[in-house]
Image 1 (cartoon, rainbow, N blue to C red):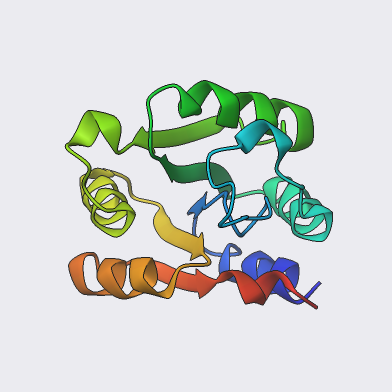
Image 2 (image 1 turned 30 degrees about the vertical axis):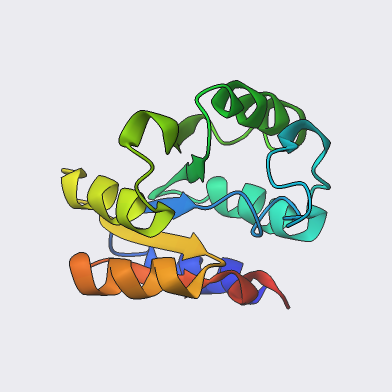
Amino acid sequence: MYFYNLIKELSKNQKLLIFVDMDGVIAYFDFGRPSDFLNKRPLFNNIKILEKVSELPNVNLHILSVCKKDTDIDDKNKWLDKYAPFFKERVIISKESNDNVSAKILKANYLKKVNTKEKIVLIDDDNQVLKVVNKEVPDVILYQDSVLVD
């Protein structure tokens, strides 16, 4: 409940817009089969914590994920519908439609364009993504996926 309590406290006096990566955070990432989204093993403990967080007032929870091909977007949405339907807002970006730009740059560029008065939070398992977002969008609060583990 560490993360839940952390977000509960942080959201007492401000609205939060939380972006959560999928692969490695709520779905097991298998390097041998990176595009097999429909068969990824759900990380139920993380999903449960995030579902509870989604019920907090002043919290708006989103997915921010990157995939290789445009066709993978539909598979990721189907996976979310099955295992984490409480994520109503989803941003899934395809590298194929973005000249094969890296995930870290795609996420940083997306977060730069978010126009909100809410405080932005990103949860990701990729240290390179966190490093680039920290440099490019320094006002974003960053958490490694391990913050979800009690």
